[in-house]
Image 1 (cartoon, rainbow, N blue to C red):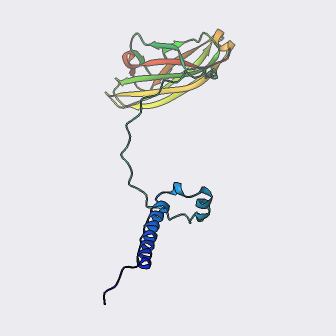
Image 2 (cartoon, helix red, strand yellow):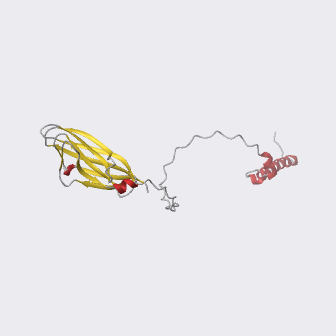
Image 3 (cartoon, rainbow, N blue to C red):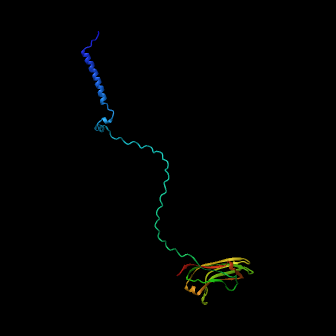
Amino acid sequence: MRKRITYANVAATMALVFSMTGGALAAGHYLISSTKQISPKVLNKLKGNTGPTGATGATGAAGPAGKEGAAGKEGAPGKEGKEGKVGPNGLSVGYFSKLGTNVEAKSGSFVHVTKFAPSEEGKYLVSATLSLANVGPSPSFVQCRLALFFEEERIPPQTIAEGFLTVEKSTTGDLPLTNEHEYERADVEDSETVLECEATSPVVVEHQNTSMSAVLIDSLN
């Protein structure tokens, strides 16, 4: 049966076309493509709470060493320090003498070798080294001493240091003497220190290798 076009059919078809076209236009007009189209109040309500902090990541590899920096400026000089304490008096040689000729020591009495007299009071380190050559027919027992002799003969000599040595026949021996002695004013003015020797058999005190010295180690002034 052949359908006929009626007013109702035409009106229904046009109504359907208009409804579909209007929906497409509305959809295109109200499609959200940016947050700018949404009210800020609405956006704030859409935001959730901040999530928990994530785990710390692994430490990265160390970077290369940097270049050495430039040298700093020289600092200002420091303040001068306090003056130190005065040190103790050093040793000073007071006297020194040598023999001019060889001296022969024999039995019976001491023979004078050399002497010195201090010029000031104080404690001295008095020392001597004697080189002894036995020229006798047999071994010789030698006694040498440093002694303080006073101008007044009634005052006996005061021995400062003494030593003993046996020198074999035709040989040479060395005898050292040393000791400290404090010379007071009377000793300085009225005495002298003598080096002397005595031997049981003739012994020559050789001047080239014999010496005597006195070192002031403590002044009494």
